[in-house]
Amino acid sequence: MSMLHIVNKSPFERVAFDSCLAHASAGDAILMIEDAVVGAVDGSSFAGKVKAAMADKSVYVLGADLAARGLEGKAMEGVTIVDYAGFVDLTANNDSTQSWL
Amino acid sequence: MKYTILVNEGPYQHQSADTALQFTRAALEKGHEIFRVFFYHDGVNNGTRLTVPPADDRLIQKAWTELAEKHGLDLVICIAAAQRRGIMDADEAKRQGLDANNIAPGFRISGLGQLVEGGIQSDRLVVFGD
Image 1 (cartoon, chains in turn purple, blue):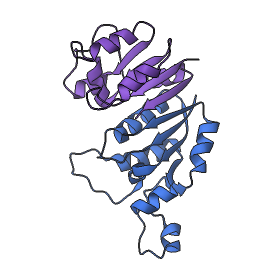
Image 2 (image 1 turned 180 degrees about the vertical axis):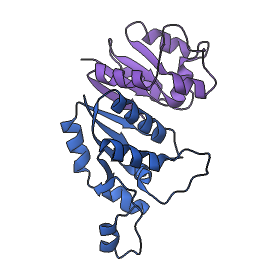
Image 3 (image 1 turned 90 degrees about the horizontal axis):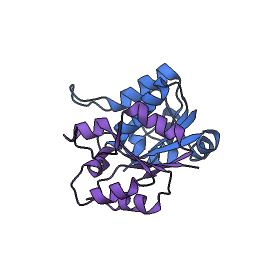
């Protein structure tokens, strides 16, 4: 049973992303949308936590929200960029979803 | 796959109102069924027909109405959240002795049981909010 974790808060603003990483299980998927997309950028003080999560979880970012913040092309290696159709696929391909509001 | 969408945030307040709309559009384009969209908390503000955004801005409420007309969506507004925020249909306005209503076409006002039913009847419940 895999879960899709949807995060929409910057890790530098709220603790929701940290909570998500603390609760997500191996084999789960994590999708960054809205302000959470800054978590996909390499070189930040949070990047190491996302990289550690990639060891046993798949990590995605919504490309439109990355582009809207001028961060296109800045997602770290290993993070898969998806569009809204890909977002829908992630909700369908995992057994349940959890929005970390 | 059958979806229920929960929208907890109003338009022009937080991006989640836009994300919910884009996600619903994408799910329909992929052939999924949207069993219900439930608007809760400030999300009820997506269901007024009396907003007039600037000409170059997106029309979020109208987009929901158009999507509902095109795909026969069931757009449900939580009654308690709506009453607090002045979202009224004709029946509710009459019952409360008010002089006007403002619900947008395609929306209906009902109770929280509709959200529970959506969660039970659907394969996925996806939540959008702040």
